Image 1 (cartoon, helix red, strand yellow):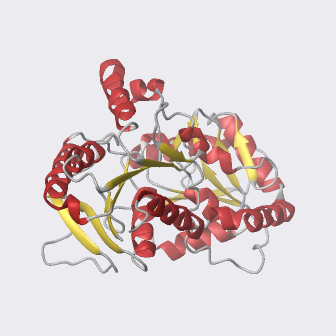
Image 2: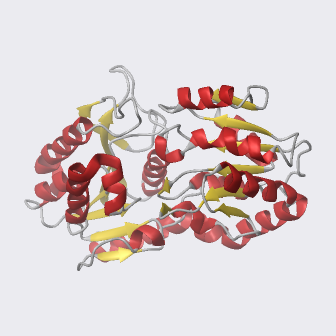
Amino acid sequence: MKVAILYDCMFPYTVGGGERWYVNVAERLSEEHEVTYVTLKQWDADHTPDVPFRVVTVAPGMELYTEDGRRRIGPPLRYGFGVFKYLLRHGGEYDIVHSSAFPYFSVIGAKAALVFHRRTKLVVDWLEVWSLDYWKGYLGGIGGRVGFAIQQFCARLPDYSFAISKLHADRLPGRDVTVNTGLVGEMVDARRPDKPAPAPDPPRAVFAGRHIPEKNVVALPAAIAHARESLPGLTLTVFGDGPERERLIAEIERAGLADVIDAPGFVDADVVHEALRTASCMVLPSIREGYGLVVIEAVAQGTPSVVVAGPDNAAAEFIDEGVNGFVAASASPQALGDAIVRAVHGGDELRESSFDWYDEHNELLSIDDSIVKIKAAYAELVPNG
C-alpha cells in the first residue's frame, strides 16, 4: 500500500509531540508499506533527512510562530497550497493520504486535490479540537469564529478520522465520517527500569516542554515558592525554550528563586530522560494539551505527574488521582504548589503505584497499539490495498 503522510513539521528539525508522532508513524508504517512524508523544507539544501521513508517538500521552511508564541497564518497557507499542488499531480499514486487536522489548510488542500483522485482515501488525525471559547481567546472574537468555522468544516472532509483523546473526540461535530477514539498509543521507547528510582532527597520537580503561552510555564516559580513553604529543600528544573522563556526567567528572578530553579533550555534527550526518572514529580501546568506525552514518559519511569484541570487539557485524562499523580484545580500558586507537595509526600509508595499504573496500561499507550488500529483503518478503506 502507498501512503502519504502530511504534516508541515518534521522531527528533529522542529521539536514537538506532533512532529515525533508523525515521524514515528511513518517509520513503523514503512516496515510494511511505501511511505512518503510531505512537509515543509526545514533543512539546508545540501542536507538529506536520514529516515527510512521518502520525504517530499512542498514549500520552503518558514518561521512558524509569532513572538508571543502563536502560529503564523502564512506557513499553513503556503503548506496547504503546496499540498494541493502536489496531490493534484500525484494524489492518484497513493492509496491513503494521512494528515494531521492542524493546521487545517493541508486537509482542505488534500481534499480539493483528491476530488480528482477519488480512489485515494483521506485519513485525518485530530490531535486537538478547540472549543469556540478557546478559539476566541486565541484569535479574538472575529478571528476565533473564523478559525472555529474552518475547524468544523474540516471535520466533515475525511473518509476516516482518528481522535487522540476522548476530550477532543467528543468535540467533533456530527457527520457520516467514521471516528476512532482509541488512538492513544504514542509511547515509542519507555526504556523501563526494573523498578522506579527511590524518592529523591531533597525533592526535585521537572518540567519539559516548549515555552509557549498554553504550556503556562510562567506559573511554575510562584507555585514552587508556595510549595517550598512546606518543602524548603524543593528545587525545579525547567527544560525547553520558546517565546515565554524571557518571562519565565524574569519570574524566577522576581520570586528570588535563581538558586532553586534551573532553566538550561533545550538539552539532549538522555538528560531529560534521566531527570524524569529521578525526579520527585513531573509538573505540567498547561491550560491546553491535546495529549500530554510527557506525562506518560514520566509515569513509565515511576515518576508521578502533576497537571492542571481545564476544559482544554486532555493530559488530565491520564491521571488517576493519588495513583500516578494529581490534578491541581488551577495553576494558581496555592493549588499547583499544594499538588506538588502531595506528589512529593507520596514518596516511594506513589512511585510504585505510578510504575504499576504504566504496567497496567502500557499496551494501550504503546505506539504498537496505534499502528495496529491505523493499519486496520487503511485495510477497511482500501480492502485490496
